[in-house]
Length: 143
Image (cartoon, one colour):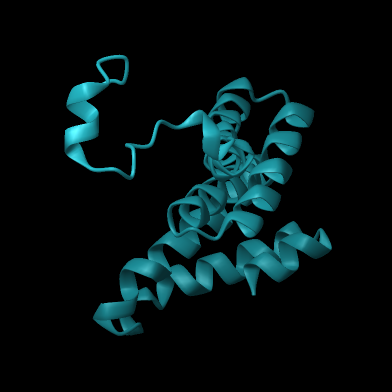
């Protein structure tokens, strides 16, 4: 609820929810407590005005995870959005991080395209006459 209140611009209400959630943290099941602590930390940072930085970092990290999960279309969108936001906010470290992974995505996308464009005649193929023909033709490279 603190995140909702922050997005509405109500810092007082957001603070009230953060205090309440912090006080009741022990009632959260142990296996979910770690995630709850992270959510509270994000809410506290958002209150400090770090919301856009965290959003930028989240977009770039999501894009990186999607890249390694071979979800290239989603990765491209999130990395592009994260890089644009980092540039807008003047966060060069985040921008470079996003650009580095975006370039990796582009290289992975371009490799199959280059292979498709390569002419089959550009590759050497051994003669169909068999290995004896290879020995008689020293101009051909050995395989």
